Image 1 (cartoon, one colour):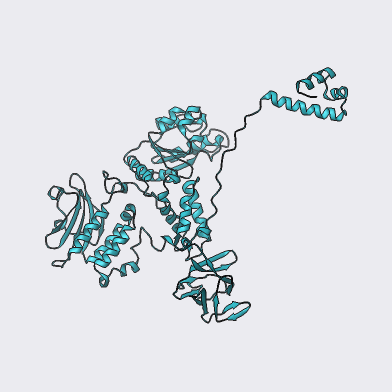
Image 2: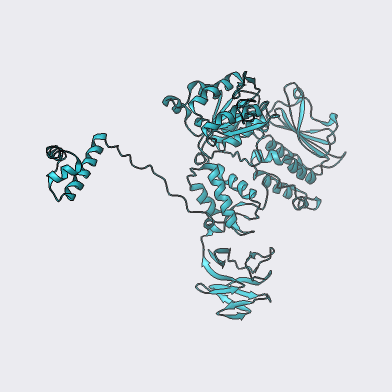
Length: 575
């Protein structure tokens, strides 16, 4: 694809060439933004012309400079350049994938519909099936989890479009108790809400027009209800549209048997991307068991798979959420200090030693997270077993143990079962920790989640870029990511830093993929006798060289008899 490229030092921006005239300048309103020194806010226009591009100056301060001359207009062709400010413009062929955006960051997939600009597009002047179709497209862009989080804003758009007084989405327990999940507008009167389950249709999804001024759509125990002003006319497409919205609100995350809002029980951290891959959906379904349980949890997985984020999610979602979350990296604390760090120090245990509570006592009433638990020394594992099994801790120097009310979440990037087999990890502690065991898949096994992670990490930088090109995303999807999510996040943050504000992240912003690291070939260690023979041979060589080949003198230098030297030389193969 033919494009115009602007370069300044080691930075560059580019724009694909079209038949339409483009404005070029450093200001944000330009189609081709060139934020380099000396470039005016509106510097020039750019338009395709024959085999090149016609550039016209817009009465800028520095004009266009060609061969040292200031000009008002120039036709740029391949192999030439034009100076604007301190930047150089060239005409080049670039892969079309560099300009094909597959991920856009000019909309927030969670809160995309909260801004006034979006709302103004759905006002009465644009109300109708066409606007409903646009809302449908926007909803289809959201994942089920994203739609749940954006549901209030989505319902606001729908209510404004169909001129409803209120829209309520709810679910009902087996005993008939109703709970509102999301609402737009005031809560309707009780007599207008849908009937109890025993009086609704038994079909999987049914739509019915209620008397006078209400529409309800139900699916099992979930329902969407819309109320209108009395005698307000409603077209058929409104009923069909509400039926669609209800179906999307009730959509399950790949689990046909689960509750539509079951994942809402898990409190997911803001910076965490769960994704839609089958492996992660399976893990999330299993993690629901932790919400109503106080059992200890073991998280395993490669380094960088987000074990601490999952530990925080389990804590925030479970019965210990009201207490503290204390995290200790067992590999980061020296072994001689780890015991006092975990168990604490009793008063007057030694002169000059101040009493202090250990991390277990600090976690009382909450969750204790032991990261890299495999790094615990064997002697400390025995004391850890007492804490995990009896829920009591004995500080250093304390006469009696202290009771604890905690939940323990342990994590390791190693195969603890193998460590148990090799004797480096206690089997009783392993079986006690893995009351609930979850293995987090590596990023290379959930590549379909990478685009969502790229979007999240790019947004977290706070730098306004417009999106990610197809070439960049293809590169990100192909890499092995041995460092998993941590490595991906670091790469995106670095690439966004190199990307110009208002531009797209491209392949050239990414580092080259690291070369595959292969294990060195195994070399069998030499036997002790072989090593001794090599040392003796070298010593005899030096002695013979110093004695100019005289064996009697060489034997004296070595401190042995001549016969002893002869026997050694014969055994070692000397001529």
